[in-house]
Length: 157
Image (tube, rainbow, N blue to C red; front, side):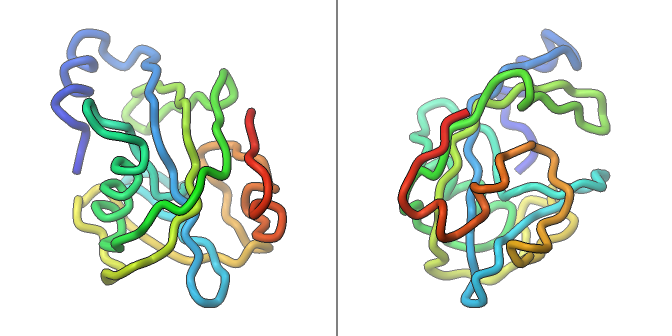
């Protein structure tokens, strides 16, 4: 789904100026231990399935909704792998909108569904091996994507 009414209303008031957004992202692995990435329409850089937390949603509800909308997969949020924020998590979209994310990254398990974006926001979805991760929009630390490292600790940045 494109931006919610809440975020659209904020954008109408502030234009493309910097907007602070609480958000979630998902690390989803397939049976081959590859990680799922998405590429949004009109963007050349990849990202994790992710999005803004909507009013009234818990972070776990938000990540479940976002993953379904962007990929068609039904997932279960299993644990928090990291919490990331600050100036280095700023991004400017191709339309000029500036954001600074505070992101909770969840380890998620596929429960059901078929890989097929439903919201029209995603142009491409693809699984990548840990050693082939594409250039991504948000500069998460590399250890977030190493399965053996992210099973025991939460990364804060």
